[in-house]
Each structure stands twice: as C-alpha cells, then as structure tokens.
Amino acid sequence: MIRKIIAPLLILVVANILGGTFIYYVYFPWVFDIGEKEVRDSITSDARELNFRLSILDYDHSPQTIARAEYELDTKITSEKLSELNLDKNIKDELRQNRYLVYMNGEDGPIGLVILNDDESILVLGPYDAPYFYVTVKDWIVYAFTLFLLNGSILYGLYYLNQRNLRPASYALDKVQFDGLALDRKSDAMQDLSLNIPKLIEHINDLRKEHQQSLYNQRDLMHAVAHEFRGPMARLSFALDLFNDKTSDSRRKKLSDDMHDALDELDALVREVLGYSRLKHGQHPLQLSEFNIKELTQDVCNKVKTIHNNKKFVIYSQPSSGSMVYADKSLIERALINLVRNAARFSISTVQINLTEYNESIDIQVEDDGPGIPPGKRKRIFEPFTRLDFSRNRDSGGAGLGLAIAKGIISRHHGKIWAEDSRMLNGALFTITMPLKQLEDVEGNSQPDEEGLI
Image (cartoon, rainbow, N blue to C red; front, side, top):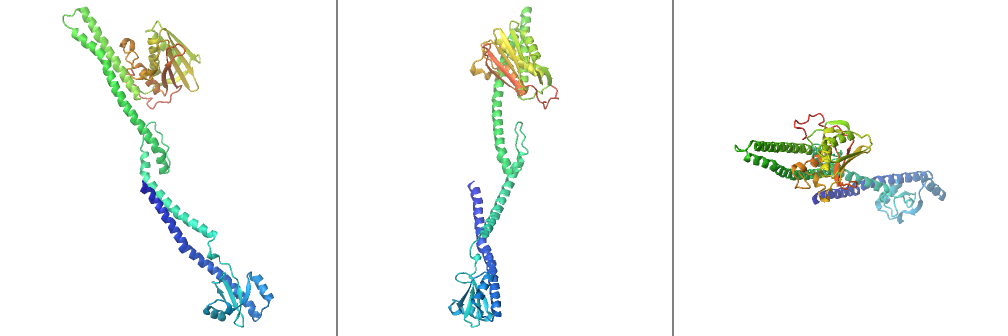
C-alpha cells in the first residue's frame, strides 16, 4: 500500500525536476538569445541612424544636434574618449573600421558606440534596458504552464492506468443480481467502485446474517415440528397397541376415532407447516383483488363466533362504510382469522377490531380483554410453534403457527405487525399496518399450489 502511494509521488517529483531543468537549460537560453538579438538590433538601428546624421554633418556636431537625436531616438547620448573606455583592442579596431558598433557587455547594460573623425572622440548611446537578464512574468507563466503539462500528463496517465486496473471490477458489478440491492452506477470506475462496493459488502453481510438466521430458524423449525408430531404419533401408537382381537366393538370404535383424529391432526399440521414455509420464502403468489375490509372482517368474526359463541365481537371502522383494499383476499382473511381467533381464545368476554384508513395505508387493530402478553414475549410470539402457555393442548392452544403465518402474510403484503398492551380493554393489542393497494405481484398470474396455503 505504501509503495502504491510513494511511486506516484516520486514520479511527480521527477516530473517537476525535469520541468525545472527544461526551463533553466532550454527555455531561458532560448529566451536570452531572442532578447539579446532584439536589443542588439535596436541598438544597431539607433547607432546606424546617429552615424548617418553625423556623416551628413561630416561628423561635426553641436549640443543641439545631440539633444535632437536623443529625443528622436529616445535614448541617452554622451561624449566619451575612446582611451578612457575599458574596451578590448579588437573592439576598438572594429569601431575604427566600421564607425559604429554595439557593445553588449557594458557595466550598466548594452551600449552603442559611434566614433568621430579624430578616431578618439566617441558618442555613447545608452545604456539600454536588457530584460533578458532577469525572469519576467511571462517566464513564470511559461514555467507554470510547463509544470502543468508535465504534472497533468502524468496524473492523467496514472488515472488512466488506475481506471484500466479497476475496470474489470467495475464490469463485475454488471453481473451482480441481488433482490433488494440498488446500485448507483457511475461511468468513472473509481467512483463507481467507491460508491457501490460498500453497498455490495453491506448487502452480502446482511445476506450472510439472514442465511445464518435461516439456518437457525430451520433447525428450530425442525425441532418444533418433531416435537409437534410426537403427540399425535404417540396417540396412534397407543391406539394400535390396544387394538387387538380381544377389544370390544365399542372400544374398537373409540380407538379408531382416536386414530382418525390423530391422522387429521397430523395432516392439518403438515398443511400449516407447508403454508408457513411458502409464505416465509415468498413462494406463494398473490392473487390480487379489490374488496371491502370491513365486510371481510365481519365474515371473519362470524366464522370465529361459531367456535367462541360466548364472546362479544365489536368492529369500529373509519370510514364507517369500510375501506376498499387491493390485496390477496384469501391471505388477508387467513391472517385476520388467526388474529381474531387468538384474541377470542385468550379474551374474557370481548374482542374489538378497529379499522382506520389513512392516505395510502390502513391500520387493523385486534384487541381483547384477556391477560395480555408479557413484554419479554411480544416478539417471540410471531415465531413458529411459540405458545405463551405450554400447558395448553392443541385443541386450545393450536400448533403455534397462527401468528407466524399472520406475520408472513402481512410481510408478503409489504406491511408490519406488532403486539402491545391494549389501553381500551387492558388485554393484548395486535396492530397491522399495510398499503391500501398492493403492486402487481411478479408471479401474480401463477396458479396456486394444489394443496393451497393451509
């Protein structure tokens, strides 16, 4: 990891060193030559012009002539003695031969020299400005632009290599197909991975936890099913042991009825387990239709009342005419039957159902005046084969799948169900909240299984 960070930094440092070297050894000499040539040409032009003017006057000049030349040439002109100037002999000989020349190495800068007729008196033009001797703003701009090009090219190269290395991982995200995982894909591979990899890892961790929990639940379910099968199987075994030739006809009929009851119990248990399993794994397609939830609730209460005819069932609806719900009517009816039957089983005298419509959802509350549910068991009662009172037999307590199936049905309809204390009746309160209208199920056209839900 450290090497991957140091390597690009070293490349950038080398690039900046190369940029500085290029500026110092290539750009600056080139600019110096150009600047020196421009200054030399300018001084040569002024010296030639002054020599031409003096030649017309046979090199006889006056202060007025020099002043006018200074004004027109825009440079200082002074009179000096050739012997007093610190010039090489070769330069002096060249000056005598050509009458004027440019001397670039003056103490105060480049100067122009024009010699008069006496070969001793000279006119000095300048000194001139020599901008090529120092760094200008333009030079800094060129330097910055050079570094920008170098660093930009290297950074782009590193970016391209990084994108090329990350592209296979980004392509791999195209093959990811998980239900409930929404990836926000980006064209930039680094941004794509940095944004979606955490989502993918989180989803995989959730799936791992769900898988582990599913294994635990499956193990518990198998243990619970085995436990539930022991009762009817024991009664079958006991009846078979007593069933022999010496048994009286009345006793045989009683034993036969017991065996049929045990078999019916096993069949009902198997159907409940299969129904719960299909709901748990989303294998039961929704058969969606529109119905009045108040009318359905009234039908449910009438069915449960045939068993608990000593209990009072009260329905409150808002609106009073009932709400139209678009869902699987048979599944919702099964969930309500389980809740109402559970409430009637544990109530003292009254079961109350409250139906409340909101903008896009409906709340269904089922409460009773029974002993209620201990706080520590309010979540566990929705687990399969959970009973609050293990002393109850199957006739009074059921297999312990009713609330688990109800939760599966409501979850299948994208809703929630929970238990709490009833403030009105001081018993248990079960609340369902779910959308008024379900989306079309992806398997909505599939036919239901032959065995049905239960």
